[in-house]
Length: 234
Image (cartoon, rainbow, N blue to C red; front, top):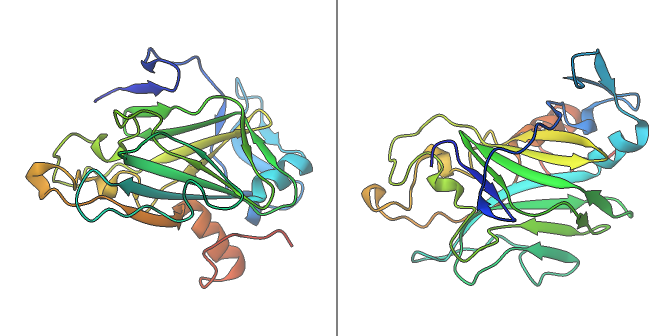
């Protein structure tokens, strides 16, 4: 699977065109006049985010999980498809899939123009360009094909039983800016091991929702280590 790019339109495709992607400290710990460390385009100085864009990003809480009913003892993260005020983009009925939960903590819906996931040399960009997180609600993203096209546990190699050291990242584009979140707990790639592989014991790979690691760090820094869920603007 080395070097794979997965697209929601045509499966495995050639490399996408370049897109400005900026590493950031989550907006919950930035002032209203946020200055991001990323460089726009050709390196013309720091990008100064508008207050409205920064606030929108701060209202978005990103969690990661894993859904697996391909193997015995399945567990689906909750909320899931059919939960109240939840938009679900995925296809079953059999899942072996990394999962993303985007939660809007505000009373205004959030428009998202792209979500992509990078696991080592594999890129997953499956969900199109017109996504909406409902106000005070949830957007859940999972595999979009019955062929398990978001099997992030296999990104390091099928039946790889030695942790590969890869840390997944999630890029979410809002208002033309791609914000990156880091899955420091390596939930999407099941710790860098294909735990469901035959050589590794065929364990169920399910995992409940957990706030993505880089956003947990921001919440802990701002609100104390006891608050590792939705950071609020104050």
